[in-house]
Image (cartoon, rainbow, N blue to C red; front, side):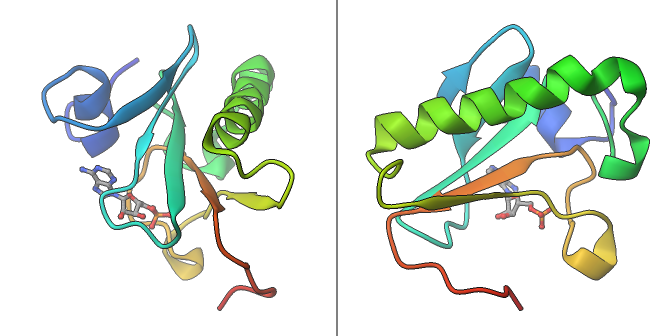
Length: 116
Ligand code: AMP
């Protein structure tokens, strides 16, 4: 399930350190190394899935678990009531730079819409 060339698989395997904030059977979350908001956490599946386009029907429970993680993290970070964004970029044109899907959970400041 893990991909030898994937940065986030290396974080899952403990080869690269990360500031972990959440773990479940299917998902792990850690603080973004280059935060764009006071809270900027990345939620990833333990299963290597490169992009949204690679999600399979059997992955639906895994994908749901990413949002359950986002909800829990937002609560812990104290941003649930004020509001936060949970967003996933797909492919280079949308800004994806790490090809292991991840939900960006951003909050702690006003967030404008639409994003650039
Ligand atoms: P994206 O551009 O949507 O693929 O998001 C990738 C995110 O991963 C960026 O926000 C990066 O700052 C973040 N990132 C890259 N390397 C690391 C790392 N080693 N630990 C934590 N976050 C990282």
